[in-house]
Amino acid sequence: MQSIGIVGGGIGGLTLALACRESGLTDVSVYEQCSAPETAGHGILLSPNATRVLHALGLKEALTDAACQSDAVHYRSHRTGYQISMRPLGAFAEARYGAPFCQLLRSDLTRLLTEKLHDREIDLHYGWRCTGLDQSAEAVSLTSERGETRRHDLAVGSDGVHSHVRRFMHEEVPPTFTGHVAWRGTTPVADLPAQFNSHPATIWLGPGRHITHYPVRGGELLAFTAVVETAVSGDESWSQTGERAVLAEQFQEWHPVIQALVDASEDLHHWPLYDRAPLARWTDGHVTLLGDACHPALPYLSQGAALAIEDAWVLSRMLENWEEDVASGLSEYERYRRPRAARVQAGSRQEGQSLHLSDPWQIRWRNLRMALGSRYLPEIAMERYDWLYGYDCVKGFG
Image 1 (spheres, helix red, strand yellow):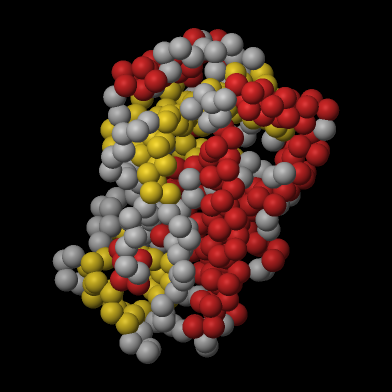
Image 2 (tube, rainbow, N blue to C red; image 1 turned 90 degrees about the horizontal axis):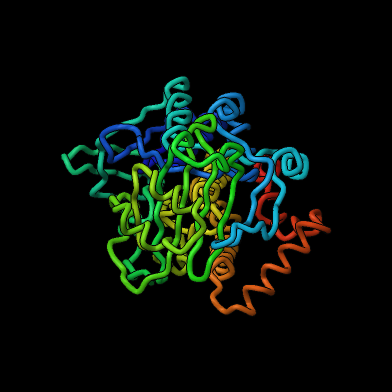
């Protein structure tokens, strides 16, 4: 195999390009439909299963400089602010999993990956929207909307939930609206009450909705995601601008700290959350899929980017090990990754149900279970996440 064409220059596609170069595959090109690198100010949580891959790609120092780390994530009651439970992060989690939790803006992570690509002299083509794909027994041809054609031995669709590459491989099945809409934004800490000065990662729980916030940009900003239940669906796009007054209405009966967070928010966007059944296959000949293009996960475990980063590492290793037999390499990639992705997708659905309980007795039982675990048995409480955060694809596919 001589060349790899990666359609989509998001986190998954950029990570794949770096991982391929690191594994010795030199002819790698990335095609991104946007005209410039991502500048969205939304936050992203990277768990140890993702950060260990980025460290292995030589980004440890840059990631440490750009990211914030919280010692714990606190769970609080939506009206009183009472701390229901606490899950340790920081040194505790790094010692347990061998890699840290990191919090940063998506645009900062994209910048770090892009700079590394430039250092490795990997071709990154902006404003290149793939509208055609043809393949023979030997190669894949990609065509842009401007009529340009690029030929590669392998093509990877890492172009997100609305993947053009996936449409060449599968008949599109309409997704199912979950009844949830997510809002994302950032808020300057200087505009917030003094309670935010220590600003640990925090999840506020209320009937039918929750809000998560955590520090980014050296603690100057709080990034937040708020998810509310609604019967009104809409376009499945996370880039839709949201109105602050609409979001404030959803949380008008919540703790004053949350109202202050919403009132001072900036760069608000919202998107309806849709769910998809796992694909029957990810690969067709010399074309395969990665990340949200093949296994979009709901955001409740914050694993969308992490799964794509894991995919990138494993795929690069399979291509290295099966360089003379691409089909077998892609088959092995899919065989190893599909069970993992399906489990995370299912776990994200379950977590969303737990966060949004409305029945008072179910809420009491959930809160009691969380409280007992965090106060008396933190090691045991963390065991339920070991399958997720302890997954080490670097060691498994080194």
